[in-house]
Length: 339
Image (cartoon, rainbow, N blue to C red; front, side):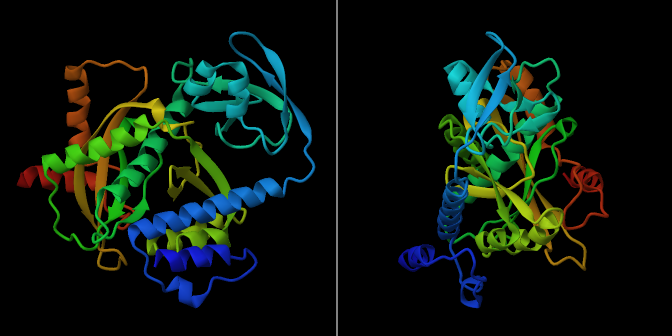
């Protein structure tokens, strides 16, 4: 099957419509991951080649060690490239870029015009946007870890994760496991997921962004009915869908996200709750995976971290994506009552 898929990659034409044969083809989790990654890289290469004649832009950097002007390449150079011109420390610790004092920008998103640039780490005086990007990134990486953790005979259908809300006490990802209708995860399984997450974050992988057409996004997520149903509404604004890649894992998020996985420090996957849909829902149930993490460099002793872990075990009150009229706080109370 992998050989057949590779042949499809080579003959892929961006101007062709999605074929009925491909849309009905079954893909294992690993095949789907490889296929999305390959299409992501093809599109990234195509966009770079379409830049054409290289134009120079002026980036007025503001910050330590001193303000300076960098001459960069329009539609090619990124804030991360700018950070590398300053120092290794800037490149490693910068989570977001702030352009012209108003626009928060991904570290690996190409710059489109001359602007001022400030690099944002987790120690800035106003960390709200950086914290949101961190929380959002943790959810995206959680989806990657869950997909990798299960064997191929257990289909993993990523559904969605809500906007970041640090006050909720946990980052989450709602995931469909259709072959495990009554799964009750053990503490050992939670430890295994945490270990998978730690291994991925320790690799220091860049979190890359790419804006693609609705048609290509549908092609990339043809194996996932949940993502496929969400893409048209996402693309309604400007015809584009924003994707992010971590290693070979590709997912949808509006962003912005942090620069790389090494910026995720101490973490734990704390709980997994079953959430159910209404009788009219196409999806009858999802599992809500919940975790908590600290940015690298933020030190917290074991006792204090255990307190926030206990809080993260409680069902996150973010609204259910398959039954939006039911507040999950009601489910939390019923779970507590039956425990």
